[in-house]
Amino acid sequence: MQHTQHMQAAKYAQLLHNPKAGDGDHMKEDLVNAIVSCGFNCGYVSTKAQRWDRLKTKTTLAVVAGGDGTVRQVLKRLLRRKLLDKRPAIALFPAGTANNFAKTLGISASLPGLKRAITGWQIRKIDVGAIGNVPETKFFLEGMGYGLLPRLIREMKTVDLSKVKTTDEELALALNKLIEITQNYMPKRGLLTIDGVHYEDSYLLVEVLNIQSVGPNVVLAPKADPTDGKLHVALLKEVHREAFIQYLQQSHRPRSGKYPKVPWQTIEVKHSITMRCEHRLLHVDDELINLKKAQLVKVEIRKGIVDVIV
Image (cartoon, rainbow, N blue to C red):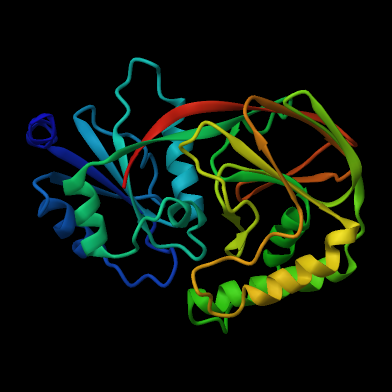
């Protein structure tokens, strides 16, 4: 009964669309029609337009059509809203290249899937990682870390993608680039305190994750779930280098739905992490930050901050 009343009251949806995301198959008319068919009035705005984030106060649903970068951009704006502002529920239409966030939540990249999510209205409360001591950024939705991933993000910025025709080709290219980087990357010293336990070693990769996969759909934390009030840390040491390269090569092939066992250490985080690493480059979701040498970074879990319907 509650569900029906909610749907009757939910009159206005705002579609926030990145028209440049992914293969660009879905035009805005298809998306608007799908949302309207679920009983909503629907406004449209491109995330490339100025002041796109001015949501009307009557908005009960924000539909985000785009990739991981667009999802983060929208959530960043929504999280900045004042405490008394009503935050709308969010529905996702994954239209990017990797769609790591949507994949962890099992969200379909189809119009029927979007309609099922809106009419079913199953709310999942999403955690975020709050970052302290890094003035340039306040939170991450997917993950943050040092080593191989930020190097990949930086190198992909200079790759010529003009001949790449599909998102699958782009993912394969990024995966090959990651394999190439992993072969020669120098590990650096890192000191972490995770829920009071100390870890110190030389690491190829230190990744704090709210979701299972990063970059070109590389699953680093198979048990991560952004709704369970925990984070996961993946620590990749020199001794794991060859196993990691093999793991990446295997992820090229079609899978039976099961991931190969991860050869590195993953640690569950219930409260907080402090990190001091000799790596200078940090990524926070898809953003890169240059740190001062071995800067102390703090991370805490903020539980159930965002309502996503799946």
